[in-house]
Length: 454
Ligand SMILES: Cc1ncc(COP(=O)(O)O)c(C=O)c1O
Image (tube, rainbow, N blue to C red; front, side):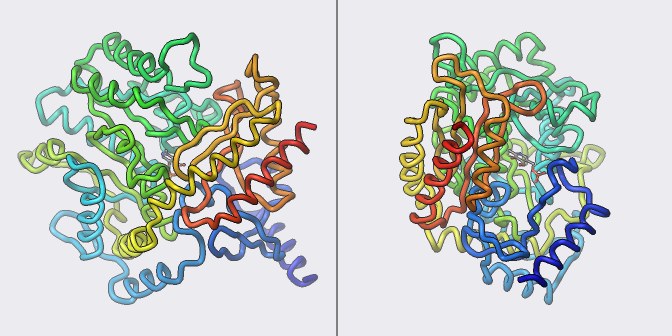
């Protein structure tokens, strides 16, 4: 053990000297945990401490850690063909099979997949697909992208400009022009007594009319907002939004980077509300994070615009690793696991049970709301249930208390610079997490709230 601690201390010292982390700040890294291995819903550090992975790492390890089958799929493919170009004129079998497989699992209007290496690149690509489509059909002025406040779409310039969490933007401005935000369907904090779903959809229509429908290319939406604090829309929102998009000729981009591949209890989340998007971004759960992969699914009409283009209007969008054979082979093996173990249905059933457990925490005076869908949940903390005002820093304290008790989760909102969404504790355990572990999460969250709130 002493050797382990020494090695870990040396590693952390080297880390602090040479490694810049996502969301880097030295204060947040003083006592960083160095992960060494993972099994199922558990992570183990270099000093042998075990944690429940309450967020599936970054909402992505859907099938859980330590799946040898995925390691074998990667090794087998790497030995055979590690990499080759998939630019037009070339292809490879895993990319072809994975595209066919995902199109078959997703919405009935979907026709083809373009692969990327992650969520932000998928959304960048989706914005370009949208603009490309409108140029191809003779409406070159339709360029603007609408997104929703508290939305998170990634850190590249355009994805950041569609993101609406001020902390991610403050030090990197100015934003890319022609991106604008509207109110999200956030029932708990919706002003007035109206239906947040209807009124938030109507806010999109108002924005389209205000900008001029001839200038708006698309709206991008997470079906359930993740980083904004697991905000589940009322069932009225997406059907009405689809109608509005159709009425004004605006493409609907579903950002299913978190919600895809079973997380919400359906393969893809707009299925909950019977709505089909025009473009769908995916990443994370497609490989359960075992290798970086993402992509965009496009509908038949978008594909047709690409397929019928004259040579001088071809889809000049490319990335070296689009259609990477090893990543795609792991994607296929990951989908095999999800299907074989019935993890989509499991997320629905166990998600309901998990949420019912979390709802017992509503007895605490500082728990304002428990919400979620499938294996995706949030607990929103407030000073009191009447005012719903957040207590600055409370969520972060609860997360620290949970860490001491062996649970990793994340706090979102309430502390990203100016108050944004409420102060929410986010949970998204692997879809295979055993019942006893889910119960343990509820227990730890409850104890941690009690400890932090006093
Ligand atoms: C909804 C959503 N879109 C996009 C992204 C960006 O994905 P990546 O970090 O792979 O670029 C994320 C990441 O958390 C996300 O939650």
